[in-house]
Image (cartoon, rainbow, N blue to C red; front, side, top):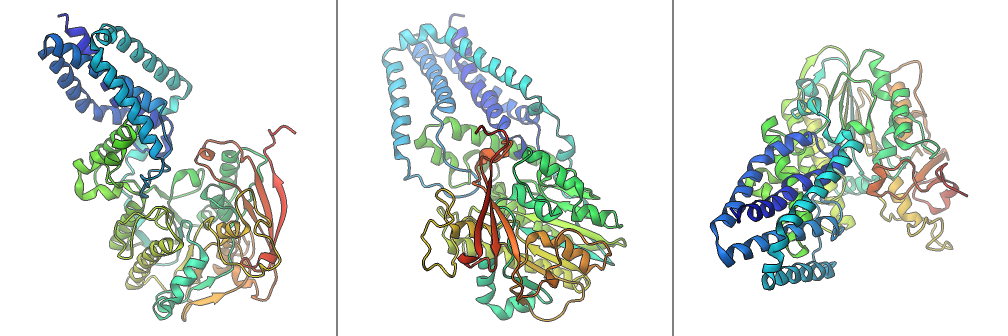
Length: 579
């Protein structure tokens, strides 16, 4: 009986952190990333948690004398080290989204972690008798503090425990997502962060192939986006409204979407509107059917729950383990627990492969079952960094990714999109459809610009971001095929913007009332047009921010790729900023 309390307390202290406190910490900071409610994840982790607790505590009870005291002391200290590692020795490794991690960088982290773990475990080994005396009170005290902080955070953020039943039942796409109209289809594809200069290079390297595959399309080489990331870019090209840092970001995005967008406008004119996107970018949109691509994609709700729980356990272990063990848990994005659970499907936990699998599913299940006109908005993240595939389009993470690496992945995604176009042809839908292929923004990486002579490298730069990089974030793909358009791919140098897409759609469909902007087909290639681009430095924390710390407006009067066309106009600081 004397061994009971130390054995149970030390085991519970360690298990509680791995299976309850750790998942809670990760979930509360990433609620939008999980379709499964936290309670369901914790329920799934209950069996392995109980199993580990019984194994650890029964081992302590089975040992006697010195061995028992040493074992319990080491177990308690492992709990302390996990607590220290997961709450204080938390290093930044970047987004764990499929990119390879350079483990040669930040080697000092390994020394800090290693010295901490070896020193505390070593001291415990030599002074286990003293440590043993505090195991029960210390385990109870720290566990109580962790549980109290969990409770307080839950009261402050009740959405952490919110039910997600509706999203849970939409892990598998509704049948209507695969159904098209026998009459009129407006098919709107967004390949996230696909830059126009990279698209132009890919096409030029095999002009005959792409020119025929993109029959009837016009590629608008000079298209500029409005913002450097998805958050504000999507409301801008869907509604034509521009954010200027005067109201909270989420409030503006919701207001812009509800105020009038392509989908809402077509829905009011009798179109069935199907949205395949992250709801946070189209919140308040009018739709007939909506689907958010599940990651991992495919399988039953039960399979998804198990995979998500395995992902959570991997993230907890990655956070709580010392630096020198993290690489074995990460395992080049194959992850330890996920790889053990389902080695064949482990790459589907990477966004690229889940979005790729959805497009493959769309191609394989495409059907013509509707008589009403249909508008499909499909936002895929396959072209967005990180680079996770090589020339054979198979898993091959690259970090840091070069421009050529990005182009290789973009080509894989473009070729996959062409398979979708071929399926439209075989279904007899291609000629009659209005098809828009676009990016939402470019990439903040340097592009080649003309008229650089006489201008300093930091001309029009924002902090450490040069104008060539800012222009790279504005250079966005836009290619459009009007209904019944024929002939090989055309290239236009008309100075157009993504905010012209609503007006282009209304013009091509012969609707009386135009939407925002000008039709891209009405802009003459020789017209010098004044356009605007708004730049901000994106940080992951901006998802929770109310305003951008700084938003800079640029005027582009002329070619996007000409430095002399760019002028800085104004800087918009948040209204809460003190002067």
